[in-house]
Image 1 (cartoon, rainbow, N blue to C red):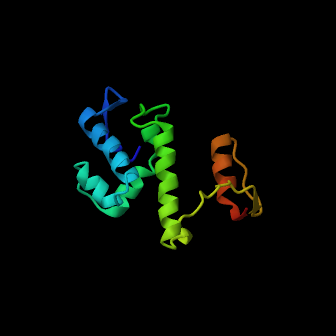
Image 2: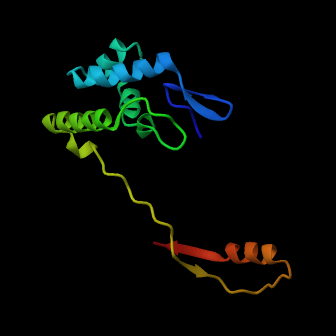
Image 3: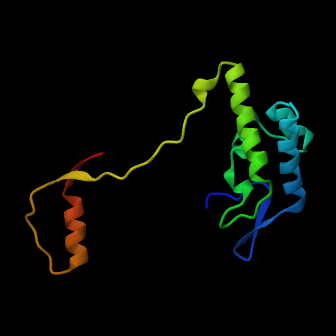
Length: 138
C-alpha cells in the first residue's frame, strides 16, 4: 500500500476511521454536492489542498468501504458526486479529460530465442528460459 487515504489511520495492521478527518471527508462531499467547487468545498471542510488532490480524494472508492477500509460515505453519495463531476465537466466542455478506466491485459504471446542450455535445477532452467524471451505482443 503506497499511502493511507485521508480519513483513515492504520492501527494494528487494520485500517480504522479517523473520526475527525472522516467528518471532513463527508463534509467535502456535501459541500461539493451543494454546488461549491472542489477546492472551495475542501477548504470549507477544513482540508487545505489543491484541485487535483481534491479530485483524487473524491474519486477514491475506498471511502465507500471495501475489504480493508471501512466506509466513510455511502455508495449513493459517491455516485452522485461522480455524476455531478461529469455534469460539470460536460458543461465546461472538458469531457475529453474524463477517461474511462483502462482494461489491463497480460501479454499472452512472445518470441523465445534458441534454447542452448539445460539445467538440472528447475528454477535455474526457468530463469534461463525467461531470459530468452525476445519480444512480447498483446
